Length: 505
Image 1 (cartoon, rainbow, N blue to C red):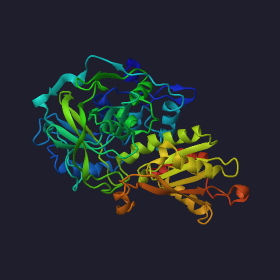
Image 2 (image 1 turned 90 degrees about the horizontal axis):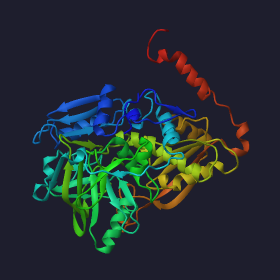
Image 3 (image 1 turned 120 degrees about the vertical axis):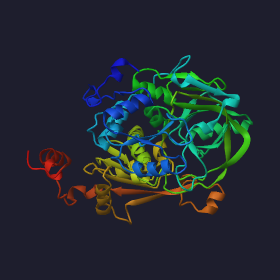
Image 4 (image 1 turned 90 degrees about the vertical axis):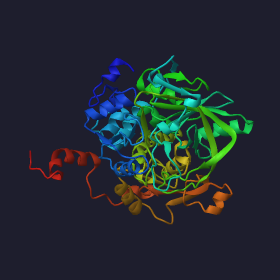
């Protein structure tokens, strides 16, 4: 990490061309934790058990945007210093995580992320180094023992202890050499084996299916404790052929340093906390799940899934597991996905040629997938429907979507109530809704009938709602009895003390 970036003041990042420029004040999870402590947003909880208490406490705090991140330490049955961190994306630290001022609203944060990190971003290739903090401890052969790590039992009806919820998997396409980072749940099967689920169509699944079709083991590295920016980038839908390490390098402004696994050659961050290296057997299957998923349901039951035999474990002294278990929306996962995926959604819509996109928002209550909103300045008949259909079918919006609402530019689409108000007052149920059938979904979708899941038919339908003023008579549409966004902003600045119950300054 460049010295200037590490020492940057989070409250006042540099500005370029009138736009905010992201400046990350951390290079790894520990530096991130130090920055969160400076913000006063870290709580340490000692003595909670991994079988029940950590999961209960995590569920409590991860539903609150105002709650601190929590570090669980002195976990019974494990060495002191072997820790679990949850709720990293909340409060002021969510802005810090992305390298922006802490006073930006969530949609301003998403727009800043879009401007600074997606538009004209030139990847910076990662570089291989001989070692790093992650190689402080290397366990191989008989020394591999996953039970030393406090993998929690996150939800009451889960099928096992999940070491990977805030983790990412590193895989390589056997045909092209393209390396991908993806976030998939990882369950501990035994001391030397893990199982994990990947939905069909995901990049990691594509790689795995290619190896399985060849009857060859797939080399894999699972990073259990990486820095938050790399984790968020791994969560985000990048185009095929793009390596997320190189996107992180572009965001940091310098190459990401990686070390290569001794058994697979797969690279992983030199400053990661814990890395599992091994091979996915092309033939072996073991029961995996159930697991409480991002839809708020146990959408995918226990089933036989491929397993990875761990050949080596790399970890820092006093390692930290980054935990991001999904809860019923909205939760922490919804918060971070909403910010990053909304930026990606706007980028995808504009790149498809849709003009005058004012904003895009992937709503938290739909876990940033099932309810999307787009605000446009209407320029021609059909403009709203065009924006809605592109949002529903572009790479960012295509997987497991349900509803897309398109509004005029005067609506704050990140505000669920305001978006709903526009939908119920500017749309007509009989004429404003288009339906797309047989779209890409997932077994995690609880609405897909069991008999269709049994046949492997993982599709759903989409509703595109035109919630704009009807184009042909929009100038005659009744005016809104509310101030413009700019006037409302000035009112908040001038009279905000009234909302806080304070006297006039």
